[in-house]
Length: 435
Image 1 (tube, rainbow, N blue to C red):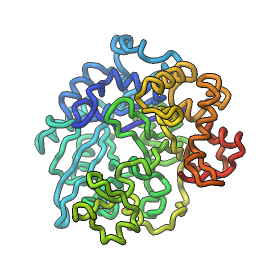
Image 2: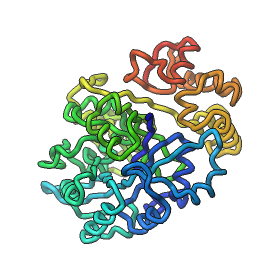
Image 3: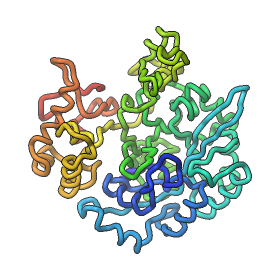
Image 4: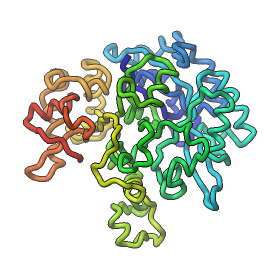
């Protein structure tokens, strides 16, 4: 079974998140986006766990569905063309802040559990360590290695994935408070780490440059703070619909079952380059080095971004890749494409009308971006939209050059595997390159 999974999201109990991050709205937007399996998020929070117990029921092994009476109330908000089965998987993020080797470490980690009883036991243990009620993503003074040990002691069927590993301030390899390797972070328990979440500010080719990461399966998730942000990044599978099968695919990296990732353009990530957001400073690594790492506005050291951090740890040149890689697809969200085409905001009435019209005619957003033909898009949204997908990206390229909707070196031998690549081919654009 082909599965689109988004395994890192949040609930309305997390800080700086939408009040619409309820199980009902996640169910709704998973269908609109085209997501099969979505994590519940925030499994360490007692309030959210109570909602999970109240609103979900057991489905396939290790997975859950929204109760029928709740789904029925939301069904009319989902276009008929988008309606599909949605499953929830128990998983959430923990913020670990602790001292190691004389330095303060701040690392975010994802933990996953196979059943409700295991989640309850995890909460009992974590509440002895810190406050798990103040935030959906609790902040605990617990070493990442020790959190991994704790969840494995509770149930060896639990799984653990370091989150957005390059984020400067809160990640395993982050420039400001992380480590230089997986082994340095997890020590003797490193063998239990089998997958790494690349985060919005990096993509697979950036990670391929670091040979120390070759053994790990690279996964992507949205880290959504609102339902509408679901699947801006996601992970693709072709396996049985179950908790064990999904994690077996990630563990093995078998290309028959683990099909790669959908990516956000890392240049759009807020931590991709160096700088200070409040000072309006955004620098590439060379500029940072030329300024001695000091912000010209406030005089403090700039935050070293993901691009720079990768360069520091890389032992392969740009374009280098390990023996084992998986396909990836970088997509521009449909509302953003529409906003550029119509020269208005993503939340404008015109964009929203067109967005919902396309969903009603062609199906979920990811289906439109990955599978719908040029003719179908033209028929549903007009020739201007179909041609605009190509024209929008041509305008970004230097004169005489071309660019495309996604960067897809993993499909270098078959760029027509996606609809948008096919559109480019129909217009005589044979070369696919990075934005």
